[in-house]
Length: 148
Image 1 (cartoon, rainbow, N blue to C red):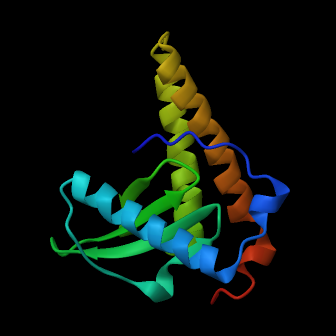
Image 2 (image 1 turned 90 degrees about the vertical axis):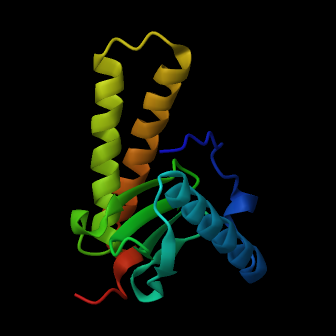
């Protein structure tokens, strides 16, 4: 998981053009590939039909890797993270999975008596982003066009 401290979006930043959305998507794609490569996983292809983009907040990618496995990768204005595809049935479920995992990770950091400001800040970032992901997961209008 990579830590990225991002500030909340302003109203102006929330309205983005198609060109900005494509640029954001490219940056998220590159971040996802880099994250997997840093974990020793070489991406082979992305499954576009199962990937979801909620610009400029987050993207959930489904990658097939050269090792024969498939992974969910989350990128955007939050920590970049991955999980094997067996963790979630679809992008919405992957969002919930990462939310729950981050809450557990933050609890683990705090329960070990984290005194280092960086660790505490990271745990707080995880909690904040976990709550945001879960709110998006629960936001039915975002998922209206999803196959049931």
